[in-house]
Image 1: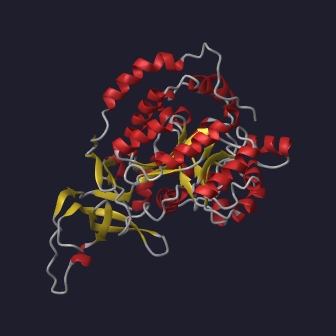
Image 2: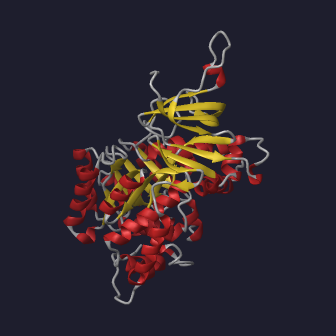
Image 3: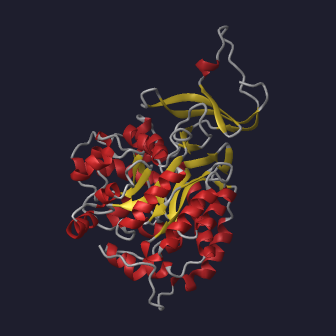
Length: 459
């Protein structure tokens, strides 16, 4: 440890930590030292007391945060979303999936401009920062605008330019060009992926070409697949294989890293293909949307766990989920798993926290950098206030965090050691100005009189 002042010191908090078996634990009265965007140390009074019993002084720092009464967690990760779709929050309600896409969302998205995407991303990032999300995986259009917002607001993100086969080879080429141009941007806070939309909108030729490009350039693939059981059944009827089996036969599961969005249609026969995948394969689960669409199944966390597939937490876009609240996704994941498995012991609160921290970090390919409050990891930290009446008394801290705390209990959000929100005050985004500009653009964005769609949903 150097004698020069640290950049940030957080004192008095209870820190969520992982042991060498990745079990969740909590260290009381912890001090977290951050230097050059990295966690230098996480210590307790016992660690800091020399042999003579004299308490060590708090290290000097450019900034000190007194976090007594708060819990320090690794920043949450939204493993699959479409951030700019906050502009469509509440526009397509109470509709089956096909009508949701064809009658509302895809007609409206044909109106999108880069400015709409920028403003939507800015509002989404504000919402996520206030909810303790420090990193998100985004899969959308006009992603140069999203990358610019990420750089400005200080968040971390895995970004991919989405494409359909209906765009011709230009769609795939644009996705690659975006990924190569922005990889490592924003001082390393931006990582990138190739982003084919889904097996039902991207044909086998494009998927195979994407797999080759991913391997050649060392890029991951972020794709919707087996989103629901209907998609799996239709794929079996039309092609004789499931969407997951399409990913295997086209090479997507053949060596590149893959992030599969949703996977509620993953069936038992898909598990061997996922287990055979030679790259890092993960699934992002966004349970609130599945409940809204009345899908009959949910992401099979237990089956995926048994074959070693990490499942990260997600929200999907706010057009389907209505919020970007990963805290809610964590609680719903635990509750839905108890209900669907008929076992109150699965998921436990500690298992849910594991999904929200290490598994989510691994799902977006950043498990070696974030997801744990450990020396050497990037300083993506959130401080959660548990002094409210709805979180007291605390008998089981893990259960309090998962089932009693809310995203609004997040007081401070830090990415790479930079404070993006302190005591609920956003420091990098002017929300009223974003809302004002969006309001002016809404009539043109929501116009569906033209009869266009960006794509057809036919599964």
